[in-house]
Image (cartoon, rainbow, N blue to C red; front, side, top):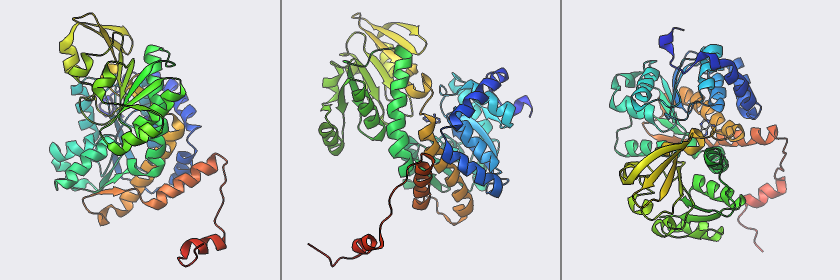
Length: 421
Ligand code: ADE
């Protein structure tokens, strides 16, 4: 590989990266089993695959699996602040996988890296946030002819893709990995729950017990955050726009109120809604001195950062991932990780044990797309139910947990409609 074939921070970090990738692999038994089958069967032989994912130890185990299946894979970052530079170096040095990702890269470099991954002329894209698919459709339409299809990791990406499909703009099929049960019920809930608190704690070392934590939204990610913050002794307030989710949050034991009310009582604010300006100027105007504001959604739009900047008379980086904004009235608001996903900016993202299932879905969906893509329409597809069930079964097996099976009598009972009281 020449230096044009990759762009990472420092190749000397490679050995540290390899140790950490191997550490994560111990918690990724399902991905390992898929890798072993891929090595035997080579289902992705020769396919050009461009992945735009958070460059972490878990992602490294996924791309190694894709390469083991014969894919000609390249990787770029799906967020400017989530890259683990040692991992990027190890993939280049030890696996000869071209990687374009540097933690803290500016927006120009981010898009240059995205285009470098597309210069690979992918037949399959693997996105976390739909940036590859969106760029192909808007700026790189010459690549459409090569495309078999894509896979998408996250809720935000799927919202974008469904909007494209509804507009009739989507030009190839995409599998919505996020919507697999073995993805969002675990990664979004337990992964985001733990890693978001990890990010807040690593950035601030603040005690959560006794703090009022305002969690915006009660989707799978937000409820994971609320649940884990509650477990750490925080006094959790949930805000919602969906009456059903608001009711669930209430009956799960959380206080529910409008953001304008929550804004003046919160000590820590976290958003994971996928929407824009959840913490807006009028909220930040009433937040308490010392308030901490974090985002765990995919894009850095959930906090109105331009408004925060305009309101501030002074901005100072007081810790590695903490920017202190001093208001004209003397209040200090603390923004974590520049408003980017705090779990990946200030910590290491979701633990490997949940990414194991998410990335098993990615690997098997890529295989499915290669096999079936030509028969699929230009739509967003669910992960086939048999893949989802197989992953759950393998994960249980790997954890040494066995379950019951229905007896013939029970099967028959469930299939009959005649038996009553
Ligand atoms: N998204 C959230 N956590 C992640 C991780 N550890 N690796 C890749 N993508 C992620």
